[in-house]
Image 1 (spheres, one colour):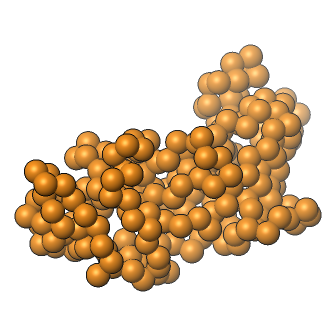
Image 2 (tube, rainbow, N blue to C red):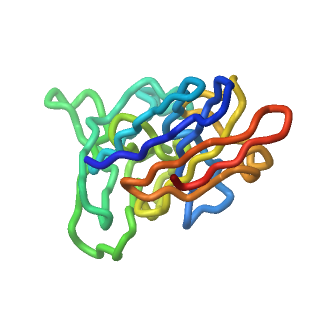
Length: 202
């Protein structure tokens, strides 16, 4: 597991969002994968897990498909090329029908994670890096497909004090300071809320 180092070279308490921009779904909202808050003159070290996982939530009641009260067992993966199907599974007493995530190794597309919903109702799918979602959870309708490139670059931006992990980021806010960061990089924040902030590689 590698890290990035975030250095607060200001006299203020700041919040930094670490995020990935969707590649195949540019209209998808960008969310904060992690939030770091290095103290004034201090440092935060953010671990970058190598593993990903796919999570899916769905309704136990087909008449209320938007009531996401049930979760399928998550599936972990470490490859950046992966394909999954969300399939129906019948309980042993044959009284209940649930969803199961299956990883497939057919029709893999290089550097693409694909999720196909073969379940009878829509399913909310989330791709996590480590323990946290890197993209906003997506509803995949029956027969629908979600694709994304999880190798996309990570970015860091200064955000407001009221921004939290998993929250949608405001494009106009993050576009001012967003800086691409690579594994092992150190970024330094300078400036102030009165004059604006800047991020630079240390």
